Amino acid sequence: MIHQTRINAHQKLLSGFRLDGFLVTKLSNIRYLTGFSGTNGICLITNSDAIFISDSRYEQQASQEVSAASIHIGKGFLPEKLKELSCLPDGKNIGLEADSLSYGQFRRLKDLLPGVRWQPQEKLVEQLSISKSEEEIGSIQLAAEFTDKIFLQLIDLIRPGVRECDVAAEILYRFKKMGADNSAFEPIVASGHRSALPHGVASEKEIEEGDLVILDFGCVVNGYASDLTRTVVVGKASDEQRRIYEVVRTAQQSAIQVIRAGISCSELDATARNVIREAGYGEYFGHALGHGLGLEVLGEPRIAAETDSSLPENAVITIEPGIYVPDLGGVRIEDDVVVRVDHAELLTHSSRDLIEIS
Ligand code: ZN
Ligand code: ZN
Image (cartoon, rainbow, N blue to C red; front, side, top):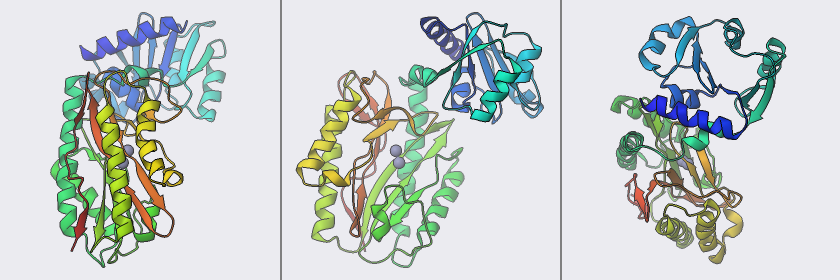
C-alpha cells in the first residue's frame, strides 16, 4: 500500500517534468519505491506502470518484498530485460538518475535503446522521501537508540593505549550483536591530532592521554540509518579544548532551537555558523551543518549555505557543527532530529556535556 502511494506520487512528479517514464537505478530509491532490499535491481516507472527487474538470486525475495510493481527476472545488464519486454518505445522521454548511473552504464543503455530520449535528472526520488512517515521515523528512532547505547559502552572502552581501529571494530561488532542490520558507514574514530580531520576513519594510532577523540558512527535498522557524533577528552580537558567544545555545543543548540517546518536549510546552516564565526573559529568549520537521514545516511537535503529549499514537516536531519584546528584537534557534535511543525524532536539522546575519561 505504502509503495503504491509512493509510486503514484512519483508518477505525478514525472508529468510535471514532461517525462514518459523514469528508470530508477539507485538501490535506496528502489527500496523506497518498491520495498526491495536486495543489492541488484532496477525499476522503470511509467505514467501507467511500474516494472521491477532483478536477477535470479533475488526471485523469491522480490516476490516477498515487491508489491506495487510487476516483477521480472533478467541476467547480466538488467536493462536488456526492458528491451525484451518492449516497454520503452522509440521517442519516449525517459528520466534517469544521473548521480547513480556510471558513464559506462549510460553508454550501454544508449546503445541498447538508441531511440529513447534519455533525460538525466538529479534527486527526483530523493525529493519525495525527505518527509518521513511515522513508521520510517520509528525505524530511525530504533537505530538511534542502538547508537546511544553503543556510545555509553565506548566511554568504558576508551583509554590510553587503545587503538582507534580497536574502538571501530567494537562498534561494528556490537551493532551486529545488538541486532542492527548493519553499521551505517565506516565508523570515524579520530584521536589527538587526527581529530582535526573531519573525516578521520579509524587508524592504528593509539589513543593518548590528553587526546580529543571524535566518535562518529551509526547503524541501520529496517533499512533506516542513524548517525551520531560525540567528542570526548581522555584525561582532563585543556582550557582551549573546553572552549572549542563549548562553542560547538552552543552552535548546535542554537540551530536545534530554531528548527521548525518551513525553515530554509541555508538559514539553519547560518544560525550555527554565525556562533562559530563570532567565537573566532569560522575558518575551522569547513563542512555543511548537516544532511537528511533515512534509507541513505547522507541523504537529502544538505543543510548548507547553498541549499535554498526549506525543510518540510517530518523531515529527519542531522545537525553536526564542528571546529577542526590543525595540530590542536577537533570537536564535532551530531544529533538526529525530526523537523516538527514548530520544534525539533531529538532522536539521539547521548549526553552533550563534555566527557573527560579518567
Ligand atoms: Zn556522522
Ligand atoms: Zn552526519
